[in-house]
Amino acid sequence: MDVALIALVVLWWALIVYAALGGADFGAGVWDLFAVGQLAKRQHGLINHALGPVWEANHVWLIFLIVGLFNVFPSAFYALSIALFFPFTIVLVGIVLRGAAFVYRYYALDESGLFARAWSRVFSASSVLTPFFLGVSAAGVASGMLIASDGVPRATYLAGMLSPFAITIGAMAVALCATLAAVYLVVEARDTVRDEALTESYRTKALIAGAITAVLGALGLLLSISEAPIIWQGMLTRSLPIVIATMIIGLATAIALYRRYYRLARILIIAETAFLLGSWGLSQYPYIIPPRYTIANSANDPTVITILLIGIVCGLVILLPSLYYLFSVFKLPYPIPGLRRSEQVKQTQERKSNEMIHH
Image 1 (spheres, one colour):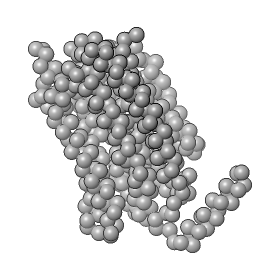
Image 2 (tube, rainbow, N blue to C red):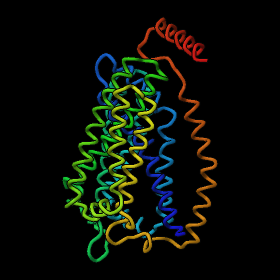
Image 3 (cartoon, rainbow, N blue to C red):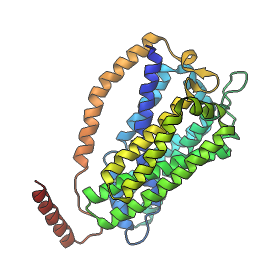
Image 4 (cartoon, rainbow, N blue to C red):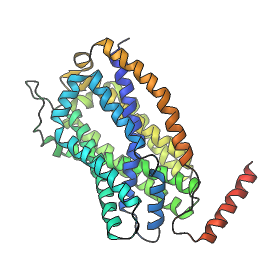
């Protein structure tokens, strides 16, 4: 079996995991921007609690993806680094600013002061710009226009990054992140915080963001006919069943949210993300960067790839249990910002009674 293809599948799974986990972190920043009104303080508190222990850990999958791409497909990595220098630079700045802003606003002495509010805006703005330009980068790869006819990466190809197709895919990336975050926060609000008002608020947000994602996805498909013909033809010949399954899962996610099956909705939105990215990868096969860089002509020596795969297996043996322990420890009930102590005590007593009845 081709070790390069195996490595590509592993890297694509890393991309899916980063989208499902890191994407939700960006989406939380999007919702933080719209946290206004009577629930604003509790929304900020919920987002802080949800992101606090895990936002930095989720970037391990991005590092995993970059290092893997560099070692498995070095020539494609070189081409992407040049052709996507502009959007990748914005993404890098956005990730750094977002992390710094989250910490500064999280530990601000006065949550309503100018310092905290300024960094909250930086946190939200970078949470929007980063997934947008990641989506723009994906559209650039799918377009097949990143490499000139002489084989040289087009570092100045900015027009393609401002095309309707690129803007649509960038906006869809933001909407997908917002949908992921809203669905996750619905579960957090109901199971961890036990706040009915927050639960209903994020349920509505999840339904709206999911609908926007679906509309943008359909528009992206239509634009790909002319803007990304290789992807369009690959979808028709190889991944059409996956695309249809993605649409069905998206509809099932909306139904689960509407019927208030929140844990099921969380599973379904992760599956939808996996199928969405999987359909892109299958449509693009066998290209890494259409139309010149394929799996065969851009792969490293098989021995190098084999050693890397062994290292990945050893690393995952340590990483996966550690991440599971991190998530399980920090996803525990906590006091809700903005509630009086009497309400918190009453809520704790009700929770204990419910747990006793359940047992």
